[in-house]
Image: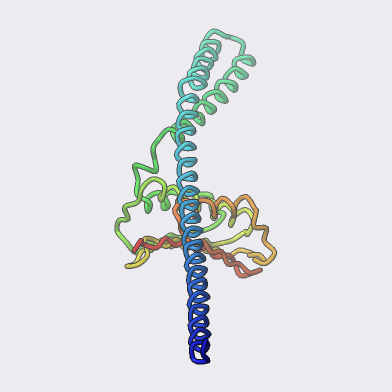
Length: 261
């Protein structure tokens, strides 16, 4: 083999070697890319499955509460009604003033319990969330809170009507309730400010703020029941969740659901 042929052979060998290495690198890169795409697909499927599972749990919870409400009304309510009739009959038949007074007290307690039971049963069985708009639901919660005069709550929104399904309305309402309860119980606030707005790229944004004692957010227990409940509810519909608080400056919670592209 001549010198020229040897040089050509070496050059060709190097070229083939470089092409082989390049092919291997391209293959590895594509393999890693396919692996990332596959892992992302699995993650997306898991996230969708998680949301569907949480939504299903919420629907089951609603159905269970409605069943409990019907049982309270049909079973316990009928028994209390019967007991109330018996006490009324005893009150009518008894002629001893002292005994009649005690029977009357028992009758009043039974009637009040029956009234409370009917109210609870109506709350559980009434499809309140499906029948009303989210603005009405939040405003009712605000009005109920202001009735107790422990904390003043204001509610603002920038739309006339926002068409939402049961799950979305339930999430917004329950998070609002949780925040109000936590602010009154733990932050000892004087005011709570609620805003529910929408824009071109945001389906809705719920902003909740209080002027309470606040807390050091770096030391908060992420597994607290109240915070966990709010995070889980936001996760049901894929909403962004952010909580900010500092000692003596109050707490602010933002829940944002962006429109799908």
